[in-house]
Length: 103
Image (cartoon, rainbow, N blue to C red; front, top):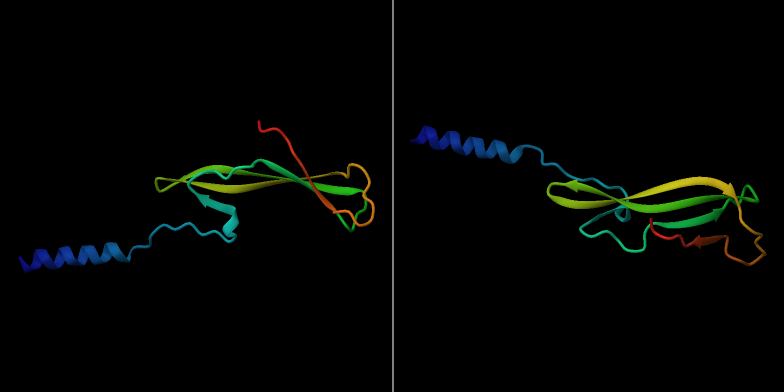
C-alpha cells in the first residue's frame, strides 16, 4: 500500500512541475479576453514629418483566437502609404481619423 501511495504522490508532484501553457503579450492593449471591443475597424491617417505630402494609413481591427476554451481578441494593424489628402495649415493637428462603414 505504501508503494502505491508513494507512486501516486510522485506522479502528482511530477504533473505539478510540468510547464503550464501561457499567453505572453508585450503590449497589454493588444490582447483582450472576452468580448470584442467596440468601434473597430478604425482608420487613422498620419502625416510623415520627414516627408511632406506623404502619409501613412493605419487601420486597426481585432481578430478572434480561441485559447484554452476562451476567446482572445488580438489587435491587428495594417499600414499603407499614400499621398496626404488636402493641405494642412500651421497649428492644425497632423493626424486625423477617417470613418469608414463596417464591412
